Length: 238
Image (cartoon, rainbow, N blue to C red; front, side):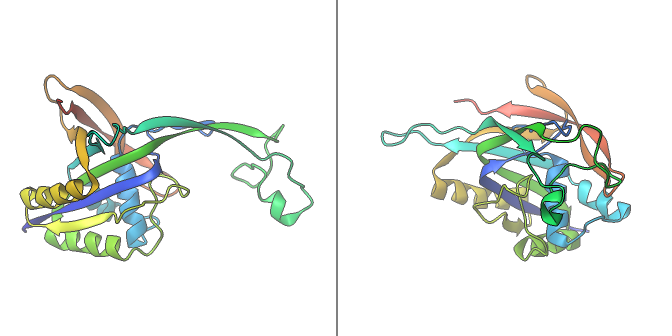
């Protein structure tokens, strides 16, 4: 069956794409993860816990990410994305006798309070000023399904966390080839005055920074599991 290429654009004041997170420290990579992008698509489709066969189809596409920064000219300064740390506390000074405030107190999975519960400290990392293009290739029928869902999502779409809303339409089109998608991307970059910073491609390439990521979703829901993939980070030469 013929394949189609989807072009996604992820832009917003803050984004977070976790890869090795615990409750107290929520890390982020400097680019979108595959699990994060597939999770975003599942939200658009209204798939809270997709069947493993369908999830495998969604995760089957290779994923390429391109990161962008503002161009420099005589009127503007260079603007990069960077990772910021947000220090937060939760579960403090709530009244246990108030039904609503009691909901805010951290609890275990059985609904009971942990021993010594009270204020809990967390560190949450986020990408500030991030702008990313994502390319996905699917068989045409599945690509059309995903494209329509991103156009009219069943659930709200966020960039890694519910507080991080996109400031641009995520779905930028469905195309017959990568070249057609790149042409659309060039038009978008020109309108936003952006230039490429780096790209992330699947596989191992010489003279590149290589990472092993555990971010290919195998099953979601209560019992999540992920598979590994290698990605190479290619820095754009000035």
